[in-house]
Length: 323
Length: 317
Image (cartoon, rainbow over the protein chains, first blue to last red):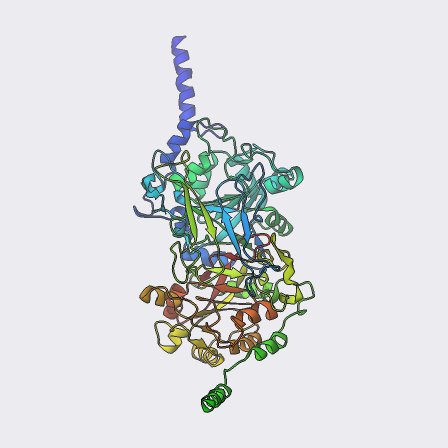
């Protein structure tokens, strides 16, 4: 009896260690993946670009060949100047002169934006996040000073992102207008999408996950994004296996709450810190979804270039898809 | 004294480039694109970037090399930067927000420092903007028409780098140097490339090279296009024009008109402008390849009502 119990227990242990939990991960799992999925030193000790290195000149040439019609689609949401449940720091547009009070022949304005967070379309540079005091590639977080990020800043990507983009449209996969807040997306959803869309995500691609966040916001109004649809932590390994250059979504990429006790945004942590994969947050994928569906074509050329802010931790920007 | 005045007048009359405010006023009508793409059009010559033009431009990607045309955001006050880019760190390694670091950007992008795009709402003439829209439509809430979001789908077309210092065998042009139509003709002849419909013409004056060598100077004097080049640009039917300074030569050499090239492009022709690009790296790459044509990609921030946008245009060879 005692021996049987022991055997069963050992079997359960074996089972747990051999299989990646698809729908349940703990902080210990995420900690383990921080090493297992790491790209530290993969492109050298001094590397600042992480998986954007996978966008090679050859990859750019292939991506340019995706322009078969010459139809561009913006992936930026219009700047939101109204405070809302999901917009704690509205974009500020200050007119310094107007038609009634011009500056000579000119009118000019001033923009102010705290772009990180859940409202504004932006790119996260690799210095945006740390884990146990380290940034990507083992750089100490003290590299982020009052003068900005002295390493892993957004200017590492000043030459822009120019590669194949793939839209993963989960509401369309599930036959829904949008996902409900808190809906987790699992690796099997990504695989089901690949099958349905007849695409295979590969090295150097940028993957955009549509949750339908802006469609839901238009229909039901803004809500507290403490609950929002997105990728579950187990998707990190899947994305690593595919060796994507970047990941983006129309929300925060992570599902929230994360479903991993003690880790607020495991996807951000694994992508930015372990894998060195920059992220596009709060893109607007509604128009892109329609254009892609119309063509039943989910791959396109993606162009995006952050503002060249020395030492910046990211940038508001307007990624653009071209069919 | 009287004789001096007469000879000055004679000199002005004999200068083939001499233009007066009356000439510019006349060009405002002669070069106009108002109504060309319909009464309600808000995109002007950007309309010349057709789907077919985008396809042709994509084919210019031969080696997959990407080069930023943006200068780094300048956070230091200088004679050419009275409104430095504001970069405020909100959380740092010493004072993180959990595991996160964040910052805030503030930018008054128009002017002579920051790489930016001018939307068509940026300028007016006799109370009107491009296509006859009233300047009063730019209110405290922003531009009702002709705002930057008209270009939300971005610029994706052939760009040609007109490298005037290289044409003249100079590291950079001196402040106040005017560029004339014959310089543009000479460039076409030397490069064997003809500027055409829907192209973006990028003019290098070497401004940033000179700034690096000699420091910032008061841009009341800066190299750029003379107003006599505008009919040339209209004839070629370019979609947009950009430069590494403010496009116009300053002073403009036209009494009573501060920036005639801006006025003609933005208001008469509906041609958006890229100002303060950094064309040093692109100039070197183009020279290395002997190839001044490349794919240009640029997408402004989608600021509703905005009169322009800081941005990072990228050349892909």
